[in-house]
Structure formats: structure tokens, C-alpha cells
Length: 476
Ligand SMILES: Cc1cc2nc3c(=O)[nH]c(=O)nc-3n(C[C@H](O)[C@H](O)[C@H](O)COP(=O)(O)OP(=O)(O)OC[C@H]3O[C@@H](n4cnc5c(N)ncnc54)[C@H](O)[C@@H]3O)c2cc1C
Image (tube, rainbow, N blue to C red; front, side, top):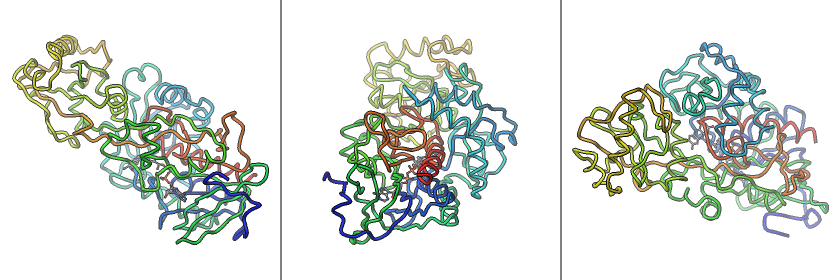
């Protein structure tokens, strides 16, 4: 049999019988376990690290939810599932999964209530800053490009970043409550247990797993196996094959378990994959937010995006469309030291001098600035539609360029592609047929974001579709 697979007929001993085995205890695995065990299934969670949490526990904790949650209403914002759906369908990349997106938007209010029911605390206050993870313990934040061109014209904007109460990174808070809830629901959690193979019966159905714990192999037989093992940002061979530009990113966003092991196990059992060439790339160059008044230029000295967009969108455009060769050009009035990108690549008394210093084509930067400044004076950006709040002519010398190349700047990457699943977490083969007994959720799958990201979508779809996988697997 292929590596990663074992034939039931050849297994000498079954060490344990369960209904559902969940592989991995990040947000997706915890949510799946809570629902599976809550539905009465004998549920075993196997986690290869010495404790649960995974990347979810290291994360910012932002969950992308909306449609009119209690938190949004308490903070005075109106939202609807339709507006959320329109934003997501327009913003998450080419060919989003319409059914999953619709279910997610329609179920988002109830999903927030479910998180509350697990004990996850959210403070009913809105963070007045501009986007991303709040440094405060506020509960609601803008976490995408909702107010930016082109989305503001396609869907009524609303802040949808729901953040568990704790200053700054809050993934550990989310995971503490989800893991406690999984334990309360009766799931048995085993740590230091790495799943190395899926067990198949003679018909090709998945009927269990082989796990290794301190060098000792155990076989657990089960009606269903849920792969919730995270993405593959730490698997260089997979990155080289599928998303090689991610190898240039200085920061790999993920716990060490994100080495694609679950995706490989699923593929060995015949699963299809989707969007393996896609990754979330954060380029946090416009923090502090006044820097959005600068312009991002590429190696041709031309703008390529509205600089007020969410920093994930900036990173994706800079890496995948400009090869990571971009600079943020500012004038003396706009310049302040960025929070995360420390290096000034060049400075000059005139745009021409700056352009020479950067090695850009002659006349390119001057022409770009002249066009930008002409319209900025009128409070317009006909090229890219940047919001008027961030439009200011860049005219006061000296001029500077903050280095946003992959060599010098933070590009923080995690993978978005993974196993193909239906809306109930069933893993699909290349014909779209479910592989009996095999489920998956979280970044081991291709989720809502199929090419472009807003903060909170990963914990959001991981928990939402993890729950659906858990329920379906338990119903068996
Ligand atoms: C600094 C940082 C900030 C982030 N901020 C946000 C944010 O605010 N909002 C957001 O939505 N996303 C955020 N992300 C991304 C997000 O955290 C992840 O995409 C998400 O947590 C993935 O969840 P998961 O359950 O699929 O995987 P994980 O949380 O990685 O869990 C997978 C688990 O499976 C285990 N595992 C792997 N292979 C095996 C195996 N073979 N056998 C047994 N166990 C195995 C791993 O050890 C791990 O514990 C952030 C990430 C980081 C690092």
C-alpha cells in the first residue's frame, strides 16, 4: 500500500474502537470534537504536539463573522448575511465556493452565539483603530478591505473582525475555551500522538488511523476520521511544488505542525486538492495608518493597488503580481517610521533623485507622482480608488522610499490550499465523490478564502466547517 495508508486486513491488532477520530487540536479539530462528542459519538482527538492549540493558539484570534451578530449590534453596526456574502464573494479570490460562503454568512450570527456558549469572552466595544488585530481588548474591529475600492461599492461595509477579550494576540484565549469545551463534551484528547497513516478497508473506505506516540504505534478503528491538521507553510517541498513565491517570505505563519501531513494522508487515500498555489501574505507596511497616504510602486515605478487596502491584500498583490519588488514612496509630510518595516531604501530631494537611487526606469516615478498628485489635490484617485481620507499630494521634499521588497520587509505567509471538501466536511475525490469515512476542516482544506484573505477567515471557517464536519461524521 502507498505510504500513509494501511490495509485493515493487514493490521494485527486494533488498540481502540471509536466512532470519530479527530486528527489535530487547533480550532478546526476542537470545534469538530465538541460537536461530534456532543452528538453522542465516542470521539478521540489525536494531537502530535504536547498540548493542543496549534497555529490557532498562536494567532491573533480574530474571527470573521457578521450578518448582524450580537456584538455588531451592541457596537451600533448594521450588517446582513447578504452584505457579508457579497463582500466575501467579491474579495476572497477567483472561484469561491458559493454554497460554503452562503452557509457561512447565513450561519454566522448563530456561530457567534455558539462561541459565546463555549465560554469565549467578547467585550462589546468597537476598536476605533483602522484594521487588523487591536492592541486593546475591544471585541470588534475592521479586519478586511470592506471600506476600500472596489468592495465599498459592491456591498454595504461593516466591521466583522470578532476578537476574544484580551489585549493584542488572542488566539490562546479562543483555544483555551474551545479545548475546555471539547473535554467537557466527553472527547478523549491524546497529545504527543502523531497520526502517520489512515486505515482503509477492502472497499477503500477510511476506517481508522495509525498513530505513533513516543515511538509506539497504536491503531484506532473508527467510523469516521476528521483531518484537522492545519496547512503546509512548513513543508518546503510542497511550497516549492505549489506556491514557490511563499519561500521568499521572511515569516512563516504557523506552528510546526503545519507541514502538510494531513493533506498528504488525504491525498494518499485518493483526495483531490484545491487552490494549493494560494497563500495569505501579510505586508504590514501601512502601519501606522498615516502611511496609507504614501504610494506603493513596483519595479517600473508605477502604482499597482489602492494603498488603503487590508495589509493582506497589499501582500498578495506585492508578492504574486510584482514579485516582491515594491517600495512605499512618501514625502516629508507623510513619513513616519513604520511599525514593522524598518528600512528606508532610498531618499532624494526630488522624485528623479529618488528614482535613480532605487534604480527605477528614468522618468517613471516622476510621472507616477505627477498623476497621483494631480488627482489627490481634487480628493480623487481615478486609477485605484483610494479613500479620500488617505489622499494627499506628495510634494514636500525630501522624498523617501520604505523598502517593501521580500529581501528586507516582513512578508508573513500561510497556505490557503488543501483538501477538497463539501460543505459538510466530506473529503472529495477528483470526481467530486466523497471518500467514505474521511472528513477534513480548517487549513488542511481549501476554505472560504481561495486566493485572497481578510483577517479572521481562517479561524472563522475552521471553527464553522469543523463543527459541520463533526456533526456529519458523528451522524455517520
Ligand atoms: C501570528 C498569527 C496570527 C494569526 N492571526 C489570525 C487571526 O487573527 N485570524 C485568523 O482567522 N487566522 C489567523 N492566523 C491563521 C490561523 O491561525 C490558522 O490559519 C488557523 O489557526 C488554522 O487552524 P487549523 O485548526 O486548521 O490548524 P492548527 O491550528 O494549526 O491546528 C492543527 C493541529 O494539528 C496538529 N497536527 C498536524 N499534523 C498532525 C498529525 N499528523 N497528527 C496529529 N496532529 C497533527 C498540529 O500540531 C496542530 O496542533 C494567524 C496565524 C498566526 C501564526
